Image 1 (tube, rainbow, N blue to C red):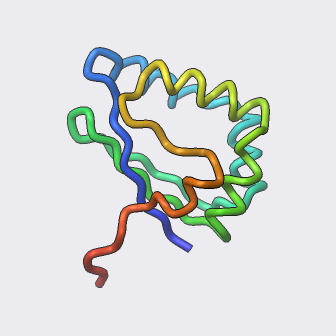
Image 2 (cartoon, helix red, strand yellow; image 1 turned 30 degrees about the horizontal axis):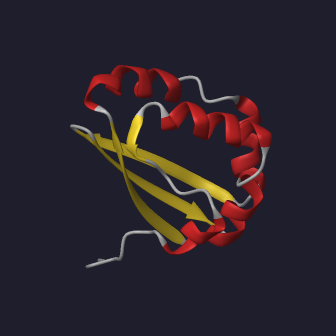
Length: 103
């Protein structure tokens, strides 16, 4: 399945956000892949961040990562950088952007 998300980085933390993503912990990458993600791309326009995730099951992804220590630590770090964060709770399973058009 494909899920699109929107988050927002704080204007004064863009450089920190991009630096963090150049050094995503390998344990987190492995956990994301193990949870069924085949691709995750983030684009930035100003402070707006757009994520496109290809995964087997988004609800499963969230459930597997929600309490995983490496993800909890990452989300804590991201919380310092973001105005709008990715909801990793299982209640966030329906938080994706609705598709308007597809070719």
